[in-house]
Length: 259
Ligand code: SAM
Image 1 (cartoon, rainbow, N blue to C red):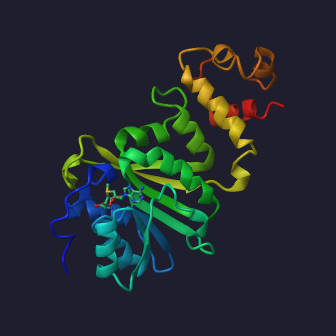
Image 2: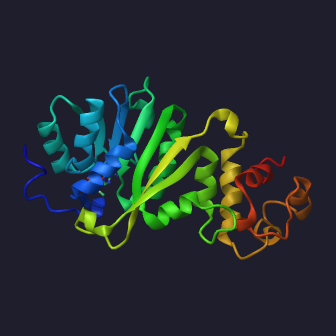
Image 3: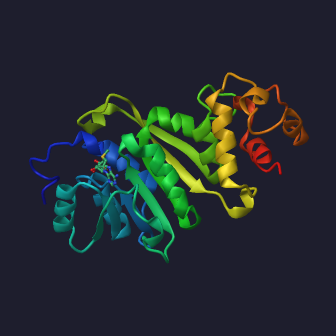
Protein backbone atom coordinates (compact mmCIF):
# COMPACT_ATOMS: atom_id res chain seq x y z
CA UNK A 1 0.00 0.00 0.00
CA UNK A 2 1.19 3.46 -0.83
CA UNK A 3 2.15 5.50 2.23
CA UNK A 4 0.63 8.77 1.13
CA UNK A 5 -0.96 10.48 -1.82
CA UNK A 6 1.77 10.51 -4.50
CA UNK A 7 2.54 13.98 -5.76
CA UNK A 8 0.35 15.73 -3.19
CA UNK A 9 1.76 19.18 -2.49
CA UNK A 10 1.21 20.38 1.06
CA UNK A 11 -1.41 23.12 1.10
CA UNK A 12 -0.51 26.01 3.37
CA UNK A 13 -4.05 27.27 3.59
CA UNK A 14 -5.07 23.99 5.20
CA UNK A 15 -2.13 24.04 7.61
CA UNK A 16 -0.69 20.89 6.11
CA UNK A 17 2.44 19.60 7.83
CA UNK A 18 2.49 15.85 7.51
CA UNK A 19 4.07 13.61 10.11
CA UNK A 20 6.60 11.34 8.46
CA UNK A 21 8.84 10.20 11.31
CA UNK A 22 7.78 6.73 12.45
CA UNK A 23 9.32 7.19 15.90
CA UNK A 24 7.03 10.13 16.66
CA UNK A 25 3.98 8.65 14.95
CA UNK A 26 4.37 5.53 17.08
CA UNK A 27 4.91 7.51 20.26
CA UNK A 28 1.77 9.59 19.66
CA UNK A 29 -0.25 6.47 18.86
CA UNK A 30 0.96 4.78 22.06
CA UNK A 31 -0.08 7.84 24.06
CA UNK A 32 -3.58 7.71 22.57
CA UNK A 33 -3.69 3.92 22.89
CA UNK A 34 -6.79 3.19 20.77
CA UNK A 35 -8.79 0.13 21.82
CA UNK A 36 -11.30 -1.99 19.87
CA UNK A 37 -14.24 -0.58 21.86
CA UNK A 38 -13.28 3.06 21.13
CA UNK A 39 -15.07 5.41 18.74
CA UNK A 40 -12.11 7.35 17.37
CA UNK A 41 -12.72 10.57 15.47
CA UNK A 42 -9.67 12.12 13.87
CA UNK A 43 -9.56 15.72 12.67
CA UNK A 44 -7.37 16.27 9.61
CA UNK A 45 -6.15 12.75 8.80
CA UNK A 46 -4.07 14.09 5.90
CA UNK A 47 -2.02 11.24 4.49
CA UNK A 48 -3.10 8.90 7.28
CA UNK A 49 0.07 8.86 9.39
CA UNK A 50 -1.98 8.63 12.59
CA UNK A 51 -5.10 7.23 10.97
CA UNK A 52 -3.35 3.92 10.20
CA UNK A 53 -2.40 3.54 13.87
CA UNK A 54 -5.89 4.43 15.03
CA UNK A 55 -7.39 1.83 12.69
CA UNK A 56 -4.81 -0.72 13.80
CA UNK A 57 -5.81 -0.25 17.45
CA UNK A 58 -9.54 0.40 17.22
CA UNK A 59 -10.23 -1.63 14.07
CA UNK A 60 -12.16 1.26 12.65
CA UNK A 61 -12.11 5.08 12.73
CA UNK A 62 -13.96 8.17 11.57
CA UNK A 63 -12.11 11.17 10.18
CA UNK A 64 -12.95 14.72 9.15
CA UNK A 65 -10.87 16.10 6.28
CA UNK A 66 -11.39 19.37 4.40
CA UNK A 67 -8.99 18.74 1.50
CA UNK A 68 -10.97 17.20 -1.35
CA UNK A 69 -8.00 15.35 -2.90
CA UNK A 70 -6.91 13.83 0.40
CA UNK A 71 -10.52 12.92 1.24
CA UNK A 72 -10.88 11.03 -2.05
CA UNK A 73 -7.57 9.24 -1.50
CA UNK A 74 -8.50 8.29 2.07
CA UNK A 75 -11.86 6.86 0.97
CA UNK A 76 -10.16 4.80 -1.68
CA UNK A 77 -7.35 3.64 0.58
CA UNK A 78 -9.53 2.63 3.55
CA UNK A 79 -12.86 1.58 2.00
CA UNK A 80 -13.95 -0.57 4.94
CA UNK A 81 -12.16 0.71 8.00
CA UNK A 82 -12.60 4.47 7.76
CA UNK A 83 -15.69 6.65 7.62
CA UNK A 84 -14.56 9.81 5.94
CA UNK A 85 -16.50 13.01 6.54
CA UNK A 86 -15.41 15.52 3.93
CA UNK A 87 -16.02 18.75 5.82
CA UNK A 88 -14.62 21.75 7.58
CA UNK A 89 -14.23 20.59 11.19
CA UNK A 90 -14.94 24.17 12.29
CA UNK A 91 -18.35 24.21 10.65
CA UNK A 92 -19.26 20.61 11.24
CA UNK A 93 -22.24 19.95 13.49
CA UNK A 94 -20.44 17.68 15.93
CA UNK A 95 -23.66 16.70 17.64
CA UNK A 96 -24.36 14.62 14.52
CA UNK A 97 -21.07 12.68 14.66
CA UNK A 98 -21.88 9.27 16.13
CA UNK A 99 -24.58 10.89 18.26
CA UNK A 100 -25.03 7.80 20.44
CA UNK A 101 -21.37 7.16 21.14
CA UNK A 102 -18.79 8.54 23.51
CA UNK A 103 -15.97 9.89 21.37
CA UNK A 104 -12.20 9.84 21.54
CA UNK A 105 -11.11 12.80 19.43
CA UNK A 106 -7.58 13.00 18.04
CA UNK A 107 -5.70 15.11 15.55
CA UNK A 108 -2.55 16.79 14.42
CA UNK A 109 -4.49 20.00 14.05
CA UNK A 110 -4.11 22.71 11.45
CA UNK A 111 -2.44 25.34 13.62
CA UNK A 112 -4.15 28.29 11.95
CA UNK A 113 -7.56 27.24 13.33
CA UNK A 114 -6.63 25.45 16.52
CA UNK A 115 -8.15 27.87 19.08
CA UNK A 116 -11.57 28.26 17.38
CA UNK A 117 -11.64 24.50 16.82
CA UNK A 118 -10.99 23.80 20.52
CA UNK A 119 -13.89 26.08 21.42
CA UNK A 120 -16.13 24.57 18.75
CA UNK A 121 -15.48 21.08 20.16
CA UNK A 122 -16.87 22.15 23.52
CA UNK A 123 -20.31 21.62 21.96
CA UNK A 124 -19.79 17.86 22.35
CA UNK A 125 -17.64 17.81 25.49
CA UNK A 126 -20.44 16.06 27.38
CA UNK A 127 -19.91 12.87 25.42
CA UNK A 128 -16.19 13.05 24.78
CA UNK A 129 -13.97 10.61 26.68
CA UNK A 130 -10.77 12.43 25.79
CA UNK A 131 -9.03 14.53 23.16
CA UNK A 132 -5.40 14.22 22.11
CA UNK A 133 -4.09 16.97 19.90
CA UNK A 134 -0.86 18.10 18.41
CA UNK A 135 -0.66 21.88 18.55
CA UNK A 136 1.99 24.55 18.57
CA UNK A 137 3.98 24.19 21.78
CA UNK A 138 3.29 27.82 22.60
CA UNK A 139 -0.48 27.20 22.43
CA UNK A 140 -0.26 24.09 24.61
CA UNK A 141 1.81 26.00 27.16
CA UNK A 142 -0.95 28.62 27.31
CA UNK A 143 -3.69 25.98 27.61
CA UNK A 144 -2.13 24.28 30.63
CA UNK A 145 -0.69 27.39 32.32
CA UNK A 146 -1.45 28.01 36.01
CA UNK A 147 -2.31 31.35 37.64
CA UNK A 148 0.77 33.51 38.04
CA UNK A 149 2.38 32.24 34.86
CA UNK A 150 3.24 34.78 32.18
CA UNK A 151 1.30 32.77 29.60
CA UNK A 152 -1.78 32.19 31.77
CA UNK A 153 -4.66 33.88 29.97
CA UNK A 154 -8.08 33.61 28.39
CA UNK A 155 -7.34 30.30 26.67
CA UNK A 156 -6.13 28.76 29.95
CA UNK A 157 -9.18 29.86 31.96
CA UNK A 158 -11.85 29.03 29.39
CA UNK A 159 -10.46 25.57 28.57
CA UNK A 160 -9.53 24.70 32.16
CA UNK A 161 -13.12 25.39 33.18
CA UNK A 162 -14.25 22.55 30.93
CA UNK A 163 -11.25 20.17 30.72
CA UNK A 164 -8.48 18.68 32.75
CA UNK A 165 -5.43 19.10 30.55
CA UNK A 166 -1.96 17.69 30.49
CA UNK A 167 0.93 18.41 28.21
CA UNK A 168 2.39 15.06 27.18
CA UNK A 169 5.59 15.82 25.21
CA UNK A 170 7.12 18.06 22.55
CA UNK A 171 7.59 17.04 18.92
CA UNK A 172 10.40 18.69 16.91
CA UNK A 173 9.80 20.39 13.53
CA UNK A 174 11.88 17.71 11.79
CA UNK A 175 9.15 15.11 12.39
CA UNK A 176 7.01 16.80 9.72
CA UNK A 177 7.08 17.45 5.99
CA UNK A 178 7.22 20.31 5.37
CA UNK A 179 8.83 21.20 8.70
CA UNK A 180 6.90 23.90 10.57
CA UNK A 181 8.82 26.86 11.97
CA UNK A 182 7.88 26.04 15.55
CA UNK A 183 8.03 23.15 18.00
CA UNK A 184 4.79 21.24 18.55
CA UNK A 185 3.39 19.52 21.64
CA UNK A 186 0.88 16.81 22.35
CA UNK A 187 -1.84 17.72 24.82
CA UNK A 188 -4.39 15.44 26.51
CA UNK A 189 -7.76 16.97 27.36
CA UNK A 190 -10.33 15.17 29.51
CA UNK A 191 -13.73 16.83 29.94
CA UNK A 192 -14.63 17.43 33.56
CA UNK A 193 -17.78 15.91 35.01
CA UNK A 194 -20.67 18.27 35.59
CA UNK A 195 -20.09 18.08 39.35
CA UNK A 196 -16.52 19.32 38.92
CA UNK A 197 -17.77 22.46 37.16
CA UNK A 198 -19.64 25.10 39.13
CA UNK A 199 -22.57 26.32 37.01
CA UNK A 200 -21.91 29.55 35.19
CA UNK A 201 -23.50 31.68 32.51
CA UNK A 202 -21.08 31.00 29.68
CA UNK A 203 -21.61 34.32 27.89
CA UNK A 204 -20.99 36.32 31.02
CA UNK A 205 -18.00 34.17 31.96
CA UNK A 206 -16.47 34.71 28.48
CA UNK A 207 -17.10 38.43 28.69
CA UNK A 208 -15.47 38.81 32.09
CA UNK A 209 -12.46 36.64 31.31
CA UNK A 210 -11.89 38.46 27.99
CA UNK A 211 -12.14 41.89 29.61
CA UNK A 212 -9.82 40.92 32.47
CA UNK A 213 -7.08 39.65 30.15
CA UNK A 214 -7.53 42.27 27.43
CA UNK A 215 -5.85 44.67 29.76
CA UNK A 216 -3.83 42.21 31.75
CA UNK A 217 -1.48 44.84 33.17
CA UNK A 218 -4.38 46.62 34.81
CA UNK A 219 -5.95 45.77 38.14
CA UNK A 220 -9.31 43.99 38.06
CA UNK A 221 -10.94 47.16 39.37
CA UNK A 222 -9.87 48.98 36.20
CA UNK A 223 -10.00 46.16 33.66
CA UNK A 224 -13.52 45.14 34.73
CA UNK A 225 -14.72 48.68 35.39
CA UNK A 226 -17.41 48.55 32.71
CA UNK A 227 -18.76 45.19 33.88
CA UNK A 228 -18.52 45.16 37.67
CA UNK A 229 -18.11 47.67 40.47
CA UNK A 230 -15.32 47.41 42.98
CA UNK A 231 -17.89 46.53 45.63
CA UNK A 232 -19.25 43.68 43.55
CA UNK A 233 -15.76 42.27 43.01
CA UNK A 234 -15.12 42.43 46.75
CA UNK A 235 -18.48 40.84 47.53
CA UNK A 236 -17.30 37.44 46.27
CA UNK A 237 -14.01 37.60 48.14
CA UNK A 238 -11.85 38.73 45.22
CA UNK A 239 -9.32 41.52 45.77
CA UNK A 240 -10.01 44.23 43.14
CA UNK A 241 -6.39 45.41 43.23
CA UNK A 242 -5.16 42.10 41.81
CA UNK A 243 -4.52 41.49 38.13
CA UNK A 244 -6.29 38.85 36.05
CA UNK A 245 -3.26 36.59 36.03
CA UNK A 246 -3.57 36.04 39.80
CA UNK A 247 -7.10 34.59 39.61
CA UNK A 248 -7.89 30.91 39.31
CA UNK A 249 -10.83 29.57 37.32
CA UNK A 250 -13.08 29.39 40.40
CA UNK A 251 -12.58 33.11 41.09
CA UNK A 252 -13.60 33.99 37.52
CA UNK A 253 -16.69 31.83 37.92
CA UNK A 254 -17.59 33.74 41.10
CA UNK A 255 -17.21 37.06 39.30
CA UNK A 256 -19.36 35.83 36.43
CA UNK A 257 -22.08 34.68 38.82
CA UNK A 258 -22.53 38.04 40.52
CA UNK A 259 -26.20 38.83 40.02
N1 SAM B 1 -2.84 14.00 10.46
C1 SAM B 1 -1.90 14.26 9.40
C2 SAM B 1 -0.50 14.05 9.88
O1 SAM B 1 -0.31 14.05 11.12
O2 SAM B 1 0.42 13.89 9.08
C3 SAM B 1 -2.08 15.66 8.82
C4 SAM B 1 -1.90 16.82 9.77
S1 SAM B 1 -1.93 18.43 9.01
C5 SAM B 1 -1.09 19.36 10.26
C6 SAM B 1 -3.57 19.02 9.19
C7 SAM B 1 -4.65 18.28 8.41
O3 SAM B 1 -5.91 18.90 8.68
C8 SAM B 1 -4.47 18.34 6.90
O4 SAM B 1 -4.77 17.08 6.35
C9 SAM B 1 -5.51 19.39 6.44
O5 SAM B 1 -5.96 19.22 5.13
C10 SAM B 1 -6.61 19.16 7.45
N2 SAM B 1 -7.46 20.35 7.70
C11 SAM B 1 -7.10 21.65 7.65
N3 SAM B 1 -8.13 22.46 7.97
C12 SAM B 1 -9.18 21.62 8.25
C13 SAM B 1 -10.52 21.84 8.63
N4 SAM B 1 -10.99 23.09 8.81
N5 SAM B 1 -11.34 20.78 8.80
C14 SAM B 1 -10.85 19.51 8.62
N6 SAM B 1 -9.58 19.25 8.26
C15 SAM B 1 -8.76 20.27 8.07
